[in-house]
Length: 135
Image (tube, rainbow, N blue to C red; front, side, top):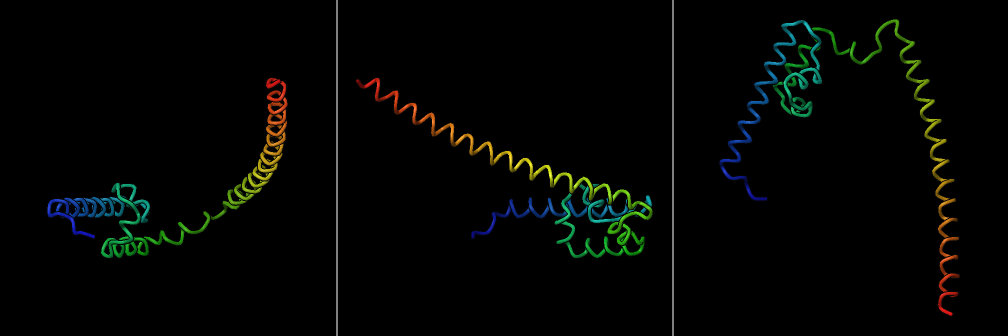
């Protein structure tokens, strides 16, 4: 693979530096406002990808430090206390969706079979018609 021309390398470097600066600003604003700091929150506010934040060792360390300092990492992973009805509702809706998908798959299979039969009958009728027209 050939190296990029100098002007493209400079543009790439400038774009990365701008993204890093926006991420640092977003991180500082979130921390100052007392909002939960997470990779997703910083990425959303800075307009960068979470992948960019994870790949930048310095930004990653800063975000992880703020997360552990604020204790927001465990809270983000678990359900809010007293909100078991939400997870039960999600499980119920998920089960319902699974059943609906199964019904739809069966219906599609039935319709495909019917279509195959109809196409076979159509082909048979066309062949018969071709024999009568040839006479």
